[in-house]
Length: 596
Image (cartoon, rainbow, N blue to C red; front, side):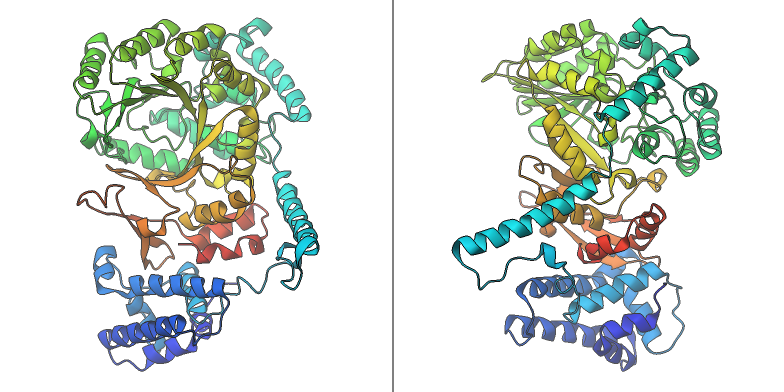
């Protein structure tokens, strides 16, 4: 049921009285600040009798509402939520119509300030801590029993997501392989040859439609992408990870990874037409001292020798640079590459290089070996990271020869070589993926994972399931990225509050080695903002449609003066509506409103 203003006022009637009694906006602001300051004083003086956890929630709510009603943040955001609230409280028509997302944000915020969030009065008994009256072994047994119930709760939800290692899934994909080989005119020996997969990247809906069933919307989006020259491609291997039927019940993340939405294609095509760097969300053009190099930090820089991939992820950070999958002209020429390598030689402060692109491992083994050898001859390079998704897109690429070539330059105590990959969902993890990872692990080379938190892996315990499986496969969770706020990614983005909720509730249940990744927001032109640190970002406004506006602080804020970054998030209300459409019980997500 959609909320109304009366629901907002019921959450804290005192705020209604303050706003209704103020003749003008500035009087309303001053009186509301006075009320919030008084509440804070009552908190610290223990005049409000609330649980310690509700105390902390209330304090955070006070800070957020102060940010939202400040004149400074109204100027930064270009909107005044207080003006809308003031008008509505006085029975006047607000100058701007607001949606249910706006009303729900303030209803929950006002509930927080009144000390009635309900977060700690609606916890299932099975998940609660044992009674404090128990001591010793009796207390330990009671706590163990509660932890069993909590573990069962997590396991029940994790089991909802089949993995690519499940025997039934392995059998289904064997049938997929036979069907796809027949559709593409290949034989059994071709399937094990990564070169065959790279030569037969699927680039249109007709070919993909012979391999798996497509919906009308999927086919139309692919056709539009081809017409607009928006990068699209799927390796035969990855097509076999899709279920033949198009329901997206199990393969939702796999299909969404490469099959674009119409919104994505239309906005990407429009943005590309507006200029060369219009899609450069991370402002790499402004952080590139020479061609092929990006630098945002003191001791590490990016080298991009190969500007193409086996296939293109729909929310790719560098979709503005990649022309097409397996672009024959995407490998940097000797002159440009040598200029970039000389730059590394001339900058001894940079002791770590991330070799990425594109996907450097789609290049020939000889090229990779020569490149690593050239980097290894630079005395101050102590770590070489290789970013690649071949573990998922074409795991056959990881052969003994490739692993040996990379391992040659891994010298413990002197120079580390490691792999950073991007596995997005448990349905992508196959026996072949595990074996490709082990090819490097057996040679002493670590493999890390960077996951992007999207709608397609954001349900309860979906990301946690992936981290746990990756650890068993030999991959260390490294980063969970908030989906970059590029306009064309609207269909994939998840509210920051949901990522914070996932890290604090679901991931926290798991052992440390399983949850040992970092949730980050990439600040354009500057780098990573750690979302676990509330002191590094703040909510400064709620827009009429319910979207929060955040201000992010740069990583170097305690080192030197640097600009902040303002970003508009997606609406929690809209996201919850999407979850409901996917059959989720919204009660499982009720605490999302209280994460900032």
